[in-house]
Structure formats: C-alpha cells, structure tokens
Length: 115
Image (cartoon, rainbow, N blue to C red; front, side, top):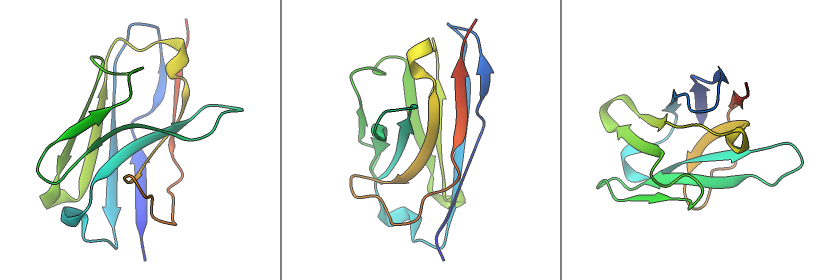
C-alpha cells in the first residue's frame, strides 16, 4: 500500500523559509522520479519541482532560484527547501511520482505566506 506523508508546512512571512519533507512507503522509491506539487484554492494541482534518481532536477519557472529539491533514497524521503517565499506560494504541497503521479496522494502540507 502506497503511503506518502508530507510535513513541514506552516505560516511564514514573505521572504521567509520553510523545509518540507515527504516520507514514502509501499513503493520502490529509488526507481522513481519524485516531485513536489502544489494546489492553491481554485487552481489545478501543478508540478513545482522534481528530481531523478541520479539527481537531475526540474523547477517550475515560478520557483526557480528560490526552491531546492533533494532526496534521500536510503530514507525514501524527498525534501523541498523553500526560500524567499511569496504570497503566491500559498498552497497545499504534495509529493508524488513525477511526471505521472501514483494514484494515491498524501494529505499534503499547508504552506501559507502572509504578513
């Protein structure tokens, strides 16, 4: 059974930082490209960043230079370091396989950027 458990969200002021974590189980984590997605109210879920097993990364243009994705295959965990956060980054953040998400999603972690 696939389980994806996201954590690390919270309320932060513009310009602040957060580090998200996602622990995966029930999958062979080291075989997959893993990504972070986000969904803001009224918007579709979008891919924010992903990382191959070998370490190649992709970033959406809106977060490039501010967010950094990393992964620890031994711990089946993927991270997202978010710096210089902006109000437009407010969303629920999820991790999943990229670019074809697995059918099961975690509960996500809420990130709110507001003064």
